[in-house]
Image 1 (spheres, rainbow, N blue to C red):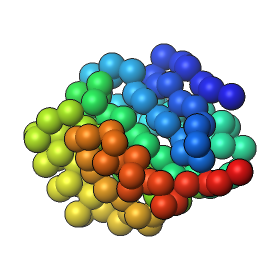
Image 2: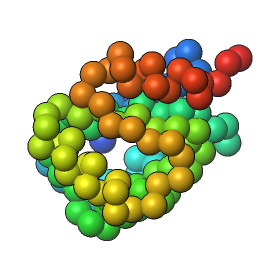
Image 3: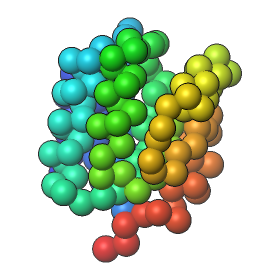
Length: 125
């Protein structure tokens, strides 16, 4: 099963949930709630490591970030965030240092390294 809506594409493969945002200028609370709802529907109560590709996202409101930090971590064994540049890397690193994130979380600019990190948490079927 896969979900492809106006905000993101998500699918399960090799025990990892892939979550790729479509181009979004700013993730606000409404968008954050919708993408988390869709992801949880796809997961059907099963915990997965998540590769979250943020490369097409330009920013997020504080409410959107706060919602994603808490509700966005539900049913995740680990999170790997994929960013496109050093600025995005710095902003996300700063946010994660000041926000309590429960699952193991790392930020990458290389998809292969992100998948290597998640591989130890993947769900083997």
